[in-house]
Image (tube, rainbow, N blue to C red):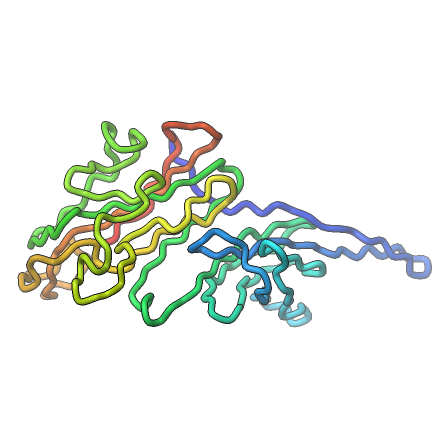
Length: 283
């Protein structure tokens, strides 16, 4: 059985009644909350400027709301109006991932705004996969698999999405023969960046599970900092086509494919997670 991971908004707020002459006027003050979290450490970010920017077409609507995250990264907008917004944060030294949200109830959680410290000298080519989920799920685990060495070929082949006989969660993981898997029980790749590129002095792991959130709603973050293995052949090429999604006549070298999965647990203590989501292949 598959379950989609959907952000569910939890509603919070207050209603104030104001008497004006003979008329009873109801004014709704909507309180929306959330948290700002470091995607690489899982810790709250205090002192970030959090902004809700209105995206609708109502010219009478307030265009933006601004607040500051407090202890543990929590924030509150106490006077937001209904509508669709862009939610983001700012703090010196951080890069944040903006999100679109909808304020629709009296008491609402906007969830998590994630950010991370960016080092231009080291992180220029890093890809971070950040997974968030709603609190309907007890936990969601991210998995990234990739070849354990250069599989240079002119015939790209994707793994079968699910393997019913092997893997940490039966019925979930792809076949693991000849592949590495990064997940909660194996958080780092075999190779460091220096192992792959000896001229580099960076000894961080080429691929790493930075955060494994088991109690909240994310983030669960995997960072890909470099190729996870040394390339043994770089000169082979062939024409692109339907298997690669590249235009015909495009030359490329097929090295292998990374596959990213999310495994959703509906209750605590599951050893095998029946509800799973197969998210994507990344060549």
